[in-house]
Image 1 (spheres, rainbow, N blue to C red):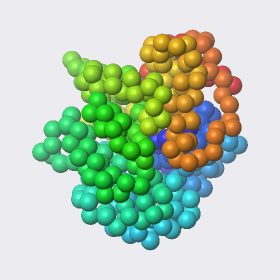
Image 2: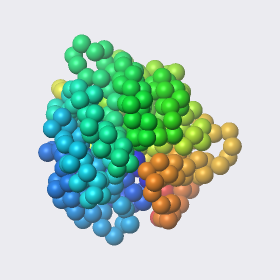
Image 3: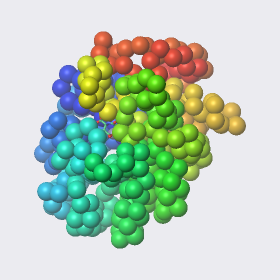
Length: 333
Ligand code: NCD
Ligand code: ZN
């Protein structure tokens, strides 16, 4: 299961969805589409188009709504009744399509109370916004807010999305079992040197920005720790070459086509034991299913240690993460 996935809409959805649906049994579908998914009605019509784009694969889209300052407890309740698995919060302007994000997260008291009552998961983009906030500290500065939310709502299930720092790993590890975090593929590989250092690498640019070596190491350790609070959310975020390779390029790494081989390759470098497949299965499936109270995965894929070269480009316009690299593992049909 992919616990954090951007599938977009329209033609892009049709092009990218098969790469996730072919490998994962389910995915938590992010609501920051254009326009955003803000209520049950738009969620249900988005679910239909995602289902159409993944038909026949056995992939289950796990739908979410975006929570904004205008969201009401009854909007949350109705979305939950219609199957929303989580509500997602972005702060304003922290990432792609987040202009309408929530400026004052603590104004959502009634929403959090409702979500706690419904046992609906709260997913937090978890970066402080504002031009005066130093970019690489956005994530760390959000942590006190997380702690406050979990103090006030101890039974609310919260996922801190795409963590990038050692202090986020430590904070999540120290909180209750109602609090978990997703880790992406690219944050297991990259530091901010891989985004801009001598040359700019737009296809590694994403929010939150990858950080220090010691942060990457903390994420790597968390991913292989066997602690079920840390699970895989690819944050696969496709943007076309035209919107990546330009001034004001979009944030987002397109990792869906390499997600599982990429995790297996990392695990091979990190794990002492030789049970790489078991580790991948837990990190990229079982742990998220447990946290989201979902039934166990029944679909099986085969991960073979057969070298594979990642294509340079997909559909002539999406450059994938690790493009052109040889990976020792591949998923075979
Ligand atoms: C994501 C996107 O493009 O939708 N971009 C990104 O850099 N991760 C949004 C997000 O999850 O921040
Ligand atoms: Zn994302």
